[in-house]
Length: 346
Image (cartoon, rainbow, N blue to C red; front, side):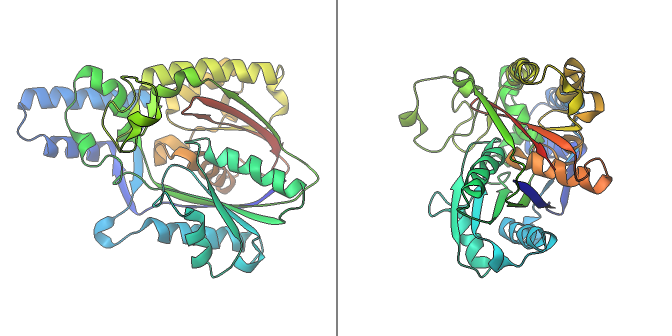
């Protein structure tokens, strides 16, 4: 499989940590001023600890729409691959952000591109883009399709959080609510085609940790065993136990990588899912990969869910850190919990 092109589009409205703190103050004007300022200091410390600096969200007041950014990313990726829309045989829509439970969100993009081809969705939290790559390679190897477009539109800030996430929380509530303040928005589009150089995919699933990160829909209790951690913030509100998630992800991914790569020197660059820059730096040290683990997405864009790795690859290409012929490993950790290692030549 060959990754021919990757395009990234982010909305225009940049939100800084200071903006978030101002929103918290505005949302809680009836609260005790001293307690409110104490709460803001806690949130500010957590931002610094995680390495969060900014994130981008839609300017809804100016009419900015997720679908327009997605369509623009798709057209750009197709053009960068030297193709036109009618050359695409299959569109796979992946990720958390979506506008429809049915039909497949991919079908709306296919229609907007003015083409007719097969299209379906893949949903597996922050692992979705990596899974889509795996599925795409399977199709390419069997020559079922020749040119596949993988897209995501990770736009869910207004749909799953704002403005309720600005409400003051108790210390126990901060533990699973703070990560929602680091979420950003983006659309990515990736064109993949057949190549004799197949990528290697490995996954490790630890379902006993599934409740540590969840974003429930109405009626979710009918679809899981009773668990106080699931739906702790209510429906359409992210629950992410950041400390436990970080510790578990670091432990499991470090073990996974060491088992798969006793010698890490042969890998030119590593691309993780970015939900905490400080956690990535610690993992890079433990694995002995240093600055070959790309960690620059979170500070600029926030947590982009399944768009995190394609966004990182796009940014790394622009700055010259990622070049053709490099051996890369994608190493996402996702809610579930699921850990992935995907190795290939870029």
